[in-house]
Length: 148
Image 1 (cartoon, rainbow, N blue to C red):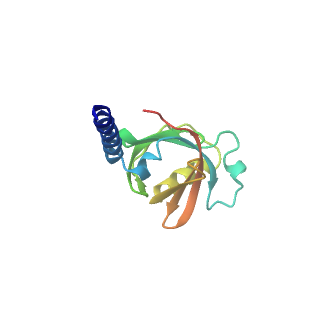
Image 2 (cartoon, rainbow, N blue to C red):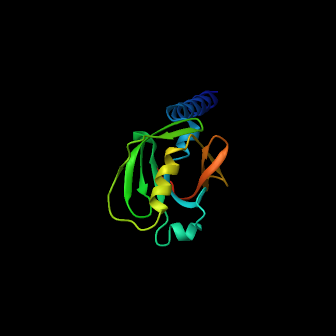
Image 3 (cartoon, one colour):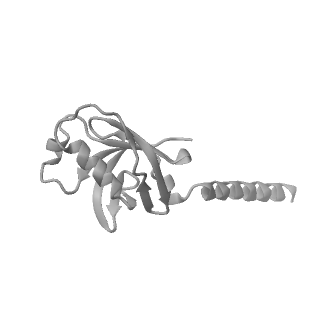
């Protein structure tokens, strides 16, 4: 009888500790954590590889600090974001390095990022879709997830 009581107590404590961790960070925003590489951007009539011939833009989400950082193909950027459920927005005053960049890729990337108001994650966590309303504006492939 003691063994059963002890086992039930252990199982209940384990379940309670797991559920409390889930409450700290919403499931939707937690899934953003890690580094993503851009594979698609809407709008420009220039081919994707023409916009980003050398380096594809990337974005890294740090959920615990609400920070985002990355490279917009030419310059590095950093700022804050707000995520709740599947809603997502970026601050308008993102800091960026100021190297000279040829082409329109950097400008298109940064201006599109400011239009984002939501996201979905598909393909078993491998694809991040950034949305404006229901329209997919950007698509990223997961490069790595941050482990805590």
